Amino acid sequence: MPTWGWVTGILGVLAVAWLWARQRRLIRRLGGELESTQKRTRQLVWERDQAQQELWPRLCEERELHEQKIQFEAQLAEYEKYSALARLALGAAHEINNPLLGILSHLELELKATNDPEQRLEIEQCIAGAKRISTTLRGLVNYARPGPLVLSKITVHRLVSDALGFLEGQPMLRGKQVENKVPEDLPPIRADASQLSQVLMNLLLNAAEATPEGGRITVSADKLTFVDTVEIRICDTGCGIAPDVLPHVFEPFFTTKRGKGTGLGLSISQAYVRSHSGEIRVDSALNHGTTVTISLPVRQMGAVEEVREDVEVIG
Image (cartoon, rainbow, N blue to C red; front, side, top):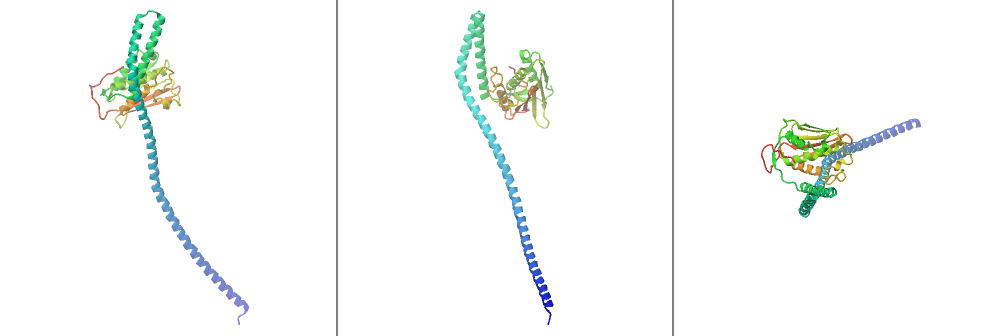
């Protein structure tokens, strides 16, 4: 008969074996669940990556569509502004211009007929005011409804020289150094000489007004590398433009000249440059100066009209 010690030992061994077998089954089951979980996790990660790959292009597309919407709304607002200005300009031209010419003619006759200095001064002030109204009206019409391009072959150096020559005797340029640094061998461009002359005159007059005596105004130009584009730059050492004002300089009727300007010069210049499929931008630092850059294609697609080579148009 085995002793109770042996019985207890055998039972202990059997219990340990049973627990060990149970633990192995539990470990195998947990291992299987872990492997299944890892497999499911890998599947979820793959699905997530696939979803992200599909979502990213959609997000990019949505962002691009949103940006296009903003640009379209801005263009639509600008077109609506053009339309409103066109209607206003046509109505103003019809209702104001003809009576204004009659008033000017009468004032000029009155000026010739009087010798009283005080009366002459009053009449001259009235004439100046009437001419300012006429200039504002003409600028409004030009901005709202610019005429078709009349293209010619233009030498930029000559165009700048003619503009500077025309302004040479202006009082606002006295005591200021004006330089034409446009290369004479710069490739000629196809453009409307009349419109570009007016753009140059507007920008040069703005530079002259902003530049103090002893300052410098420089006109330079270059042909850009790898593209058929010419850049014209008008730089001055004037007072510059404040950062809060700079974003508004191309807005019609926006002016800081306090009654001395119509606020249409840069707006008209921008309209003319864009009609040439070009761009104009203004870079300025307060109390350091301003640079206006005009980018123009060398050739114009779909020319409205071709006139004789190298036309000179000033004024």
